Image (cartoon, rainbow, N blue to C red; front, side, top):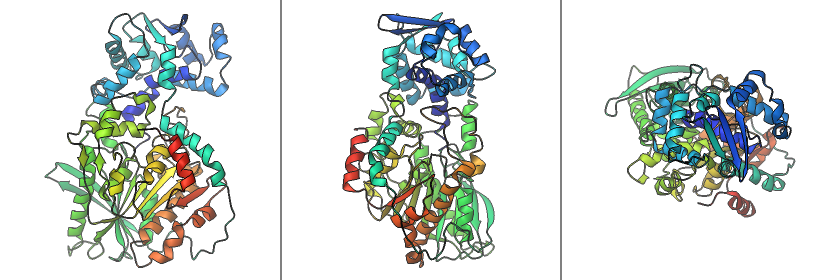
Length: 550
């Protein structure tokens, strides 16, 4: 999943950002057509659109608002100015389609509770302001939203706004509380470890890439695939299939695919046509939805179809991969939403009854990862199973799991599973998406923790270049990427290679790299690493204290 899922991310950074500014204590963060009135009990204060435009243009607040702005830190002021200057590239059609989904309806209802109107037009007014605001040639912004709100004034109930925003991205903030509470249990200890080799270093094989486009005519899906392989590949090693996150591309973990191929593994990185980057760009242009609910079913089926096609390639005399593909011994490696796909193929069952209930309530408390899962509420059934017996192991990097697998869906996993979590992940907060769900997964299993890592830290630098200058919000921003995340990527290469090796005759040689001692020895000053196979009882008590009650 790209940081978030673009539609919900845009909404969160835009109109959601309007309310978020109140959280920081500035009353003049959202406006009406000509002015905004912020009400708290009997107290009311107004600010004109002209003053807001002045803030956006000059970066300075009018003198008359010092009673409010003097209480803000420089970072908070910068956040507000950036928000006012932000233009969001979403078309009118795309915005209208978003608001016509079940998720959009819930968002409008939640935001309507913050506005005060004497009539019953709160929801239609918000819808109009968002849709018409998207017609601005510069894109949807807070100012274009205000300018198109169908009233001369937009009145905000500040007390209600605080109630809505106090739990923004609840999972992320509870993860941070959990990290503070668990810190004494994570104290550094010195480890003296004799390692046979460094699994983060490239192998000796010279890899190459085979580009294919597979046509699943029965489902009407054309699936691009990059196959990383070398002459060192043998059927003694598993086939590794990579499934990307929402709105992303098959090269998302290119550095990792290259690393595995250099060690003699065949890696097939596919692109899911209903949830890749191209689909997202088309959604932003209003040509389709961000993702159809059917994609929860089609993504696992894409991988099963891919394995069918690879099995055919393995027998073809004109194929360079002939005799090299052990498709009945597959490891599925997934990132973010792709991590969920990997878990599904390992046996995790979609259980949507609770999700369908939860996604009808206040979505402001959800992370972007949880919000994307809410798309599944449109599926007709409550349970789905996509287990593929050819899959013998699963790796889920920063996966989404909290809603879609219900209370026991993860307990149905039938293969060894490794889950990676990053403590500062805003998109798929570690506590609710990985740490707490990890308890459900049957052994053998490993939980890999990156303290200080963010959602994008494990991604290839080539697909994270748009991060500089991105504003920090409760849902996105503050990403550790590129060279700053080099240590994280090196550690990820080592752990993933060791996990893949567990399906080979060299399993014992690599087992040490899946231990707590190795994680400790590989830790850096910036990023302490941890590996556990069970959450200790005392730590689990702390986990349960901070996880949102279902």
